[in-house]
Length: 150
Image 1: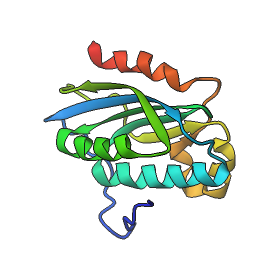
Image 2: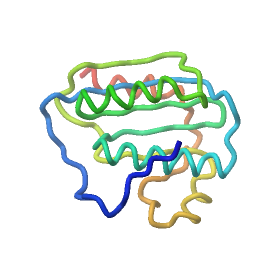
Image 3: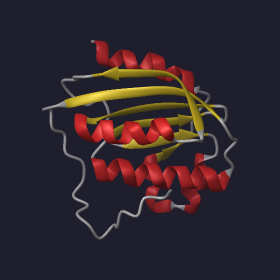
């Protein structure tokens, strides 16, 4: 379901509060192959949900697996985590949850996948939030989660 968040609402940008911050990460297997339309839909849905909830992080999709890292205020993060865990586009293999983090490691939210340049061409106003996966795999999220164990 595409979020119906309106751009006319307060779009004041990301706040970097340090109180009550948490991080969550997922490794999951795709239950369906996403084409260009599916990737565009997933990107827009995720972009606006994360922006509305003031969450930062990364979503990797390598064609077979997803790697998800999100950080933000605990209550908002828990709300979105419930939605992610019910999403039928993937089956969760592993979840990483860190209750408290001192600071965010990402200043924004981005989605990385093969074909990102094509989607960015269709959605040029979102170019800042789309990137190629460049040979990375979603499984590398496990390694990225070690950022929070410092």
